[in-house]
Image (tube, rainbow, N blue to C red; front, top):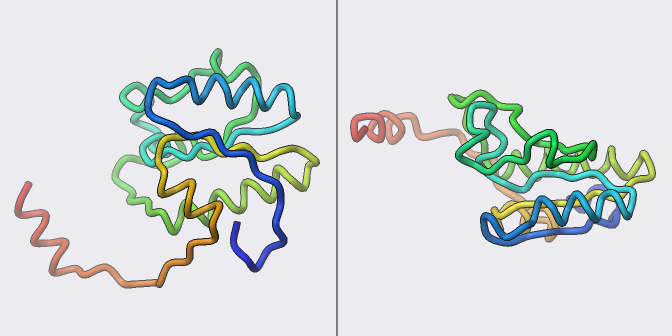
Length: 136
């Protein structure tokens, strides 16, 4: 998590789609009194529950999950924003005396959160974005 905050213990479960990450994270959370923080770049979108293998309520087994399905599809999301959101979630989980567990297949998200990646603040290039719109 960002260096401006004290280091807190965080467990990470990473791997490819359909490798059992979510089930393992839930099991670990139940055994270690933890909460899961999604590290999946597509599971943040509310409209993408099926195509992203987002865990169902039954699969979550009552374990709190963070950063799942909270954005509308038309809103952009970045690794920089993920680091902020995951850091906030991990801090809140830790403050409650619980173990934050990052779980997902987006390796850049996991690495950025665990290894204190920082990102420069840039304004979007509106001309380039308009050009990209013409391609679709």
